[in-house]
Image (cartoon, rainbow, N blue to C red):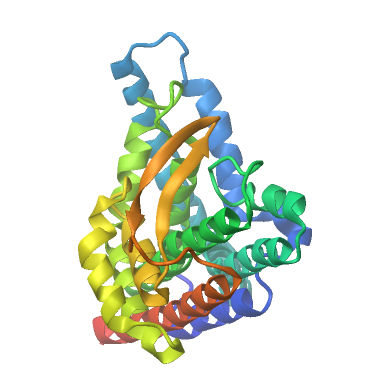
Amino acid sequence: MTHFGPIELLLAWALDAVIGDPAKIAHLHPVVLIGKGATALERQLYRTFASPSEQKSAGIKLWLILVPGAFAAAWALVNFMGYLHPVLGKATALWLAWSCLATRQLDREVRLVAGMAVEGHLDHARKRLAMIVGRDTDHLLPPDIYRASLETAAENSSDGVTAPLIFLALGAALGVGPALGIAYKAVNTLDSMVGYKNERYLHFGSFSARMDDLFNYLPARWTAYAAAFLCKFFGGDRQKSFETIRADARNHASPNAGFPEAAFAGALDVQLGGPNRYGGVEKLSPLINAGSPPPGFTQVLSGLKLVWAVSVATLLCSSLLWIIFTG
């Protein structure tokens, strides 16, 4: 197996921090390829008139084919390229690890949406926001746009930042290189594609949704407590952040998303949650840090600073644990 350790993980993180996702080769991005694979498999496995149990069974097959398949493909590709030449193996491992990370892209998208809103370009902000959140955005006013921006920054600080770093470091320690990080991205991608509680995916996507909850259980909590601890260095309220996690994190509909959202809300002393519209149907999310003012543009930017702080902390701690684990 081509060596993949803390130095390679640091290089992958640096590439993501400086460049982000290079748009010119987006069609070759592993997550894009995973998504195409999931779409093709869904066409083969989904049956419109199947019973709920048959739909669940088909959804489990989808997960069991795609996630181990993504792991095996990544592992085989790195080894094959390493067989051709060690430099090719290292370059492939680095590219795969880089593709798992999204700190720069998250910052770029959230900053762009918030900037459009503060400049009064609401139509552009709504359209851009619709690309990174699941809720309806065509009716949102600036306060709603700022709230949605901060909520997605907080939630994705776990899904797109800390969880991939943790699984990449774990994969390195286990000797499987970036394959475990790619497998995590497959888990996360499947949840984003079929993990909905609607008529089509209620049963078919239930297993993918539960597995995503399982894979993100520890990363979400690490993200929350790391953010709560680090926020004081950026003018945040550490005590309020920890208190909000204890009080509100478990009230969220998601068993994981509420933790980073509560940490960010308390740290910045803003209120998150409230009414959202999905497919034209309004749903009320429990309030987080109720009674505090709603977030504005400044709080969104402060939240992005916290995302970067958590990203750096996770990188350093993951590398340290790898060194300890491997002796």
